[in-house]
Amino acid sequence: MLDTTDMRSTLAEHYDLAPNIDLAASMSDLHAKMERSLPFPDWAMHAPYVAAINRLKKERNAVILAHNYMTPEIYHGISDFVGDSLALAIKAMEVEQEVIVQCGVHFMAETSKILNPAKTVLMPDMGAGCSLAESITAEGIAEMRAKYPGAPVVSYVNTTAEVKAASDICCTSANALQIVEAMEGDTVIMTPDQYLAQNVAAQSSKNVVYWPGSCVVHEQYSAQEMRDYREANPGTRIVAHPECRPEVVEEADFTGSTTGMIDWVRQNRPERVLLVTECSMAANVAEELPEVDLTKPCNACPYMKKITLEKVLWSLHTMTEPVEVDPEVSARARVAVERMIDLSRKLGL
Ligand code: 13P
Ligand code: SF4
Figure 1 (cartoon, rainbow, N blue to C red):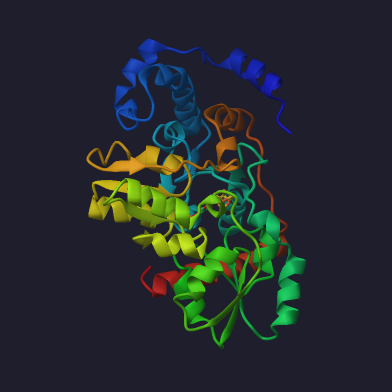
Figure 2 (figure 1 turned 60 degrees about the vertical axis):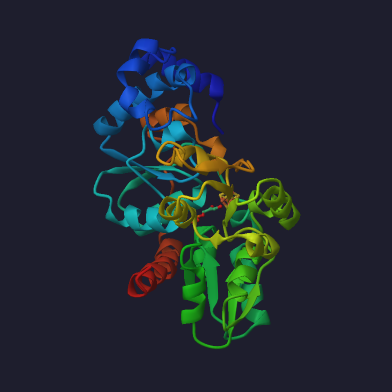
């Protein structure tokens, strides 16, 4: 458990972290990428951290991999690579630097460690979990296998290494349907997201059976909310993540992974879009899409939001906390993740 007081006093001894208008102004190229969501006074508070992290990152030979749900000062200010879970996993395999700092949640850091075990993978806050990853254990997978003998198990990457190790293959929101379709047999077990599974089932030829997990962010959206919003704002396009309930997905003009959602908006440039996902997504692309009114029915992920600039600086300063995965579990989990990546590449995803 991080002791915030200790962290702050130690950081203050080594870095000048007071809000700094001159420094912020000298880093206006970075601020330009997030001006609409981060006013200058806020940028002046973040700039000393951004400068210190970017310096330290080079000294430590580190790379920062960040998920699309990170706040703008992390996403634009310090990240070397941003993306959805699939892109982050693929990138982790290719990292040559000694250290990966994972700005995202724990299962993402674990996936990086599984795919590139020789690297030090740092998690700025070990408490950054995920309601889906917490909903199932390897015993749950065994239960599903006993209930549906012979059916392949497709586990979402939002799972622990132990669950991945007990699964036949992984999937992400970017490839779930295609992975399920590629499985042998009529019945496919999907874990742990019941809504992703139901959304896949709606388009699949397979009999998809699933575990009853859910995402605390996406399960909050309702179809009525979508209809009310569209009625009050005619012409709004709705773009939803597949962790939303099927009735929400039915209201959407497009459903896809976080990067898929951003790409759809980039390509279609509608006048007004409702991004039915985590808050920071809209903030991160606001600058590059000034003509699009990005309305966000803002639900923040309490886990993703545990990652802050202060904790990233602490993580690089102290080289904590390194993510460790039992080698035997890691080797089995790697098979499931690599199968997904190989199949995705073969299918051109
Ligand atoms: P993506 O793989 O679509 O980025 O989703 C990850 C996630 O945790 C969404 O809640
Ligand atoms: Fe997990 Fe949902 Fe947060 Fe994604 S948004 S990390 S699925 S709790």
